[in-house]
Length: 289
Image (cartoon, rainbow, N blue to C red; front, side):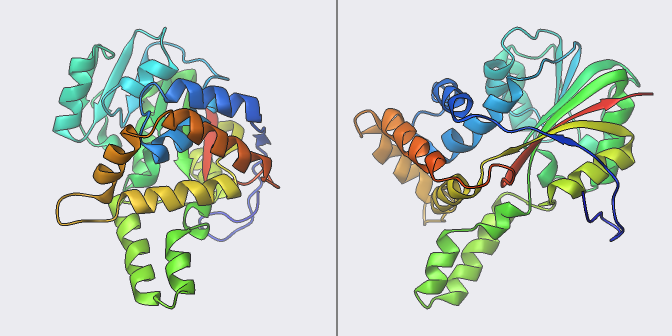
């Protein structure tokens, strides 16, 4: 590890492991049952699913930024004692209706309304990069996990911004202002406040008290550029909603769309040169005391 948040040299040694192409394609096959006609979600969550399946969650579990619960159930079908937390009341209501969670709380992650040292594990799927007060969020999660308990999370990295595709195309066409506006709109849409390099994420976790056991890079460069092109296109604003609504209607009418996109993903992975860098990362950490 190199730079930390305060500019000093870090001394955090984290084991890095990589996914195989076969694991990612198996993840794609699983995720396509949820998002068969939404290509950005298909591409990104295939990688997350592949990484998560290497681990298990000790119960009870707290799911921070839980969403509607469908993805949690897909990844962890046998996990029963789960409490969800989301700050959006509408999403929390959908999570309650899902039947996945024993309880769902409406609360910010930096103030989790749960007992100290209660959970065997914590889980946060692509949530922390959107959260303000990150030190307080991680301290709150640390407080709720038992000694020996684990924390599994996925986040975006700094490459999520560096490997942008559609704005780069607009720049090359001589349209720098629309390119900048599109990039800013995409960043604002995701409320992307913590797009950190992996070593910085590891430093945040360590500072919160966790021991970082493993880091899996996800979505390497070529696949990232495909994903980012599609995701930025999907969220282009129109008079009525986003362009993605029209695109989804279109893809629903394409024969065997998920199967064809799977072949494209397979081809992009064949072009990857460095699987040690990704626009996303999975971290597996433990509270030791």
